[in-house]
Structure formats: structure tokens, C-alpha cells
Length: 251
Image (cartoon, rainbow, N blue to C red; front, side, top):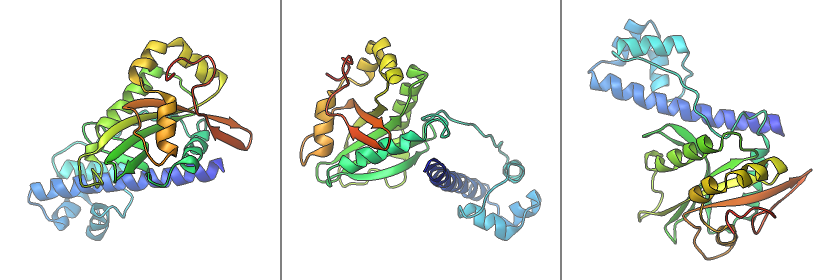
């Protein structure tokens, strides 16, 4: 299951990256008044391949990307952005999301792996929308927390970049937006939250019970920012109705 999840997530993110680069290539080429044939000839690539690349249907090698960027008078760069942790270590993240989706009320529409582009680039693990209530929730799932402040800051930056997502705002009216942190309930994760209650409390001040009730019920609004916990034991997992024992954040 872990390998399948990794392949699925990698394929999704690969498509998102191709679409993002494709849009930039076409926009820059048209701004400079160059044809695909002119760019392809100067960069030493096939014109039909460049057309596929601009459509998001061809994989760009780093060499080809550098060559095209040079022709367009730009510089290409590659950066690995922090997200929810290496998939080989954090494959349980998929189970966390699946557990939440299993308990989710039908009024919510889930969107998995939502790419955002401005002012930061990244992928939001899960976005939930309720069109009737004009409500939107940007959710990040973690099976473990290693660098709390950085991970929390990165989650907020990606949520703030949601207006750059394709199709935003996915509803007629500007949505009421909330942030959700999905955590696996383990000794290590609980210890991190207990060790930094002010950090987590300031970042996610909403009550866990209210968030769970709104996510699983036919009515209710998810707090502006809240944490929900999921217990994973063997093949079983469950969404907790309240924070685990000893956790004051979200009480």
C-alpha cells in the first residue's frame, strides 16, 4: 500500500509540476514575441516536443529546461520545498486523510493534492469545500512533527496561497476559509504538542470537538484554525472526537 500511495502522490505532483512549468514557458515565450519553432531551434529541441511541453504533456529534463530558459532570457531553478515529510517515512499520512474522508459528511467536497503557485509554491494535502455554506478548509496531514515552527509556518503560507490554485474559489461567493491540521496520535507527536502548547495554541486556537462536529455533521462551521487527531492502530484507524489525554490545545 505504501508503494502504491507513493506512486499515486508522485504522479499527481508530477502532473502539477508539468502544468506549472508549461504555463510559465508559454507565457514567457509569448511575452517575448517568439514562435515555438524559433525557441525550439535556438534551444536545440524538437518543435513538436516543445509544443507538448507547453501543453504539460512532456517531461522536461533539467538540461532542456535550462536551454529553453536561456533562450527566453531567464534562469531556471529547482527547489525542494518542505511539505509533510518524506513519503517513505510518512506514508501513514495517506491513511490519516483516508480516515478523515471516511468520516466526512457528504456536504463537503474533497480535493486532494491541490497545487498553489503564488506567493509560494507547494501542494496542499487536502482542500474541503462546502458550496452551500461558502466554506473552505485547507488541511495538512502529519504522522509526525519534527520541526514544528517551520512546518506550521509552511502550512499557513500554502493556505494563504490558495487564491492562486486553479479554479479558485470553486464557489459563487468568496469563501470563509479555515485551516486544519490532521495529526496522528502517537507518543512522539503528543510530546511535541505538549512541549510547545503556546506555539500550537496560537497557530490552531480552535476547539477540536467543534471542528470534528462540523466535518462529520450536516451543519456547523470549522473554526478558523484547529487540530484534529487520528488514532492508527494496526489496520484500524479512527478520528478522535477530542484531543488525546494530556493535550490542552483544542480543548
